[in-house]
Image (cartoon, rainbow, N blue to C red; front, side, top):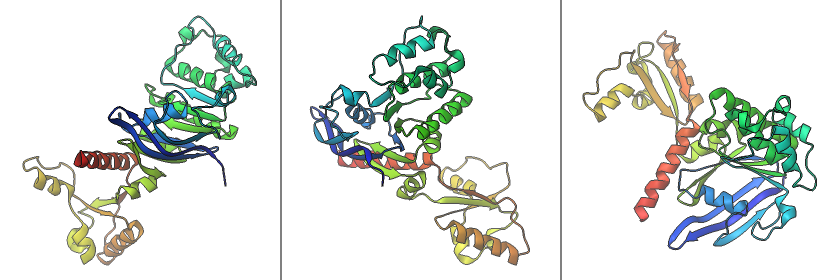
Length: 325
């Protein structure tokens, strides 16, 4: 069993009467990529800054790489790397000069050429920082965090402002950190980024961790169901067995009942069943189609997305907070 790179129990941070963090428990295993998600004002940044030793805590126990960040010394700081949302390296220096300058701050840095190749900047080593594109600047930020050869890396919104191509290149680069054995705590507002990169996800809202696990675990925690739909022309509700007939509905008609006068859909009518028993439901649909001599070629199975789960969980947390206010 892997040891914990980060272990947090009962973490609290108050500013007068305002409690920004209200009893957070968090664990990150060595070599793991954990996505730490939460809406603005949820306590995410405060929690991370306490882990990085930039902010003091009011209460709770915190261990990062086996030490308390509040009292850890320089040797501990050399074991962590931090990629902030923005940085301002000297524009007139080259990439190689910038990374070499940072390497000089560490007792045992990773070789600069190796770092530049790792982040995809080897061919641009002599290019000046002021002439770099946004994607190249972010690669340089990661190079500066990795040159100290850290065991733990904090990544704060690493692909903000990237286009889709640059974002996927960054994902491949971050995913490659697994081969180095680096533990990563990732904060991001992009649900696809968290889903593609993270081994596990922790969601914070109103200063508390409200869910942890994989994307599937979070969907389960939010009580979300898989959506199964098909064209009503291929198999009508009247041809369904009684149990499925009661569960099936037409989204357009349901919307019209909620908001009369919204207009008719121009596409063919579809039937939908939302269920937690996907295999059994699909099997029953196919059996019903077979008995009626039909084929369901338009069948779609849509599991709940991480974004669905995140919005449901944080929305419930907001409502709970309002009810106790």
